Image (cartoon, rainbow, N blue to C red; front, side, top):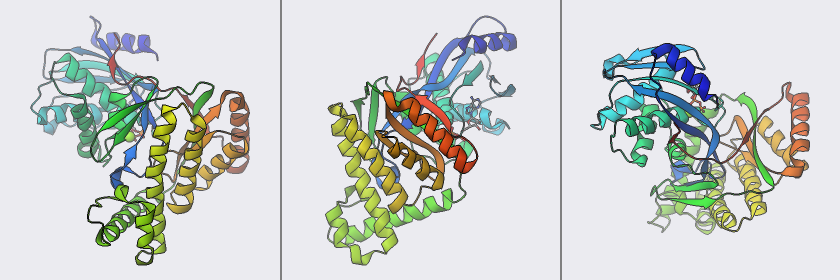
Length: 384
Ligand code: ADP
Ligand code: MG
């Protein structure tokens, strides 16, 4: 990352002395999709792409912020009424406000920042931005907020200042990430566990379809309703302990097959399967068994496509190409209806797979998928 460029622009804007430098990454999710609202597990890891910010206390109550990538300036206080216009600045303002709401008192600061997480590609550039400032302000102003609460501050920023009702995975991964590790997060208990991720001889690469199908938000709501309904039907069928589909086994689900619509049954079948796949991946990672990890990724894709019906032609196409090329694992990453596939690829197949995926995708859809290789890396930190 171009830290020297950020430092230079910081100095041009705000003068000497130099500020402190903080960074926070984007994330991938290896497996565990559409599980968060079913009380289940997600399995994210921080990546080697993120946001870097130079920050210096300015002794006033004002924030003066410069976006290096957008070449845009914003200035605001931490009063609710001083909400900035620019959407990028709202993330910084939101983090400050959420800290203030929690009784913390970050002071004013000058800052310049830039990042290399592609925007809107499913790697959560927004969480990288929030986590950078949440972590940095907590550190610089000695606010004493624990990292989990910093993640909640980022999440609340999305809810209250951006209008995105997201879960906590992205901010959590950005703050808690650790090089060489993925993190299994239980979205019900918020317990988490690090698993080793050292895929020697493999690479992790995302292929971005660059499509976004309209259906996404109404379809999302319908999926949620199906899941809640299926869980309720199982619960009322003699399983009072069932809170979410995460608590349901395939046997329990089969008992109520007649009581569910075909559609609701398929949705629930996917979620139940995804819970078992996450646990299988957990075991596999403990053994460095990446072939099993890859098999589970394909099964997740298949479930998301056939049962949960949140894939699309472009994603299925890339998944098929991966299979044909002998790629170890491939699946749609994120909610679906567009975005990226995440692929676990053996070194010696890597170049051939990319060439074929690009050429065949372009021949069919008129443009090449974008390629993002990622390495699992550390979470939020001070770097200078
Ligand atoms: P993503 O899925 O990548 O999180 P979002 O739409 O949630 O996509 O967030 C993207 C927004 O975050 C951008 O519109 C912008 O406001 C802000 N953002 C992300 N990266 C940068 C950056 N490098 N510079 C300025 N703003 C950024
Ligand atoms: Mg986002």
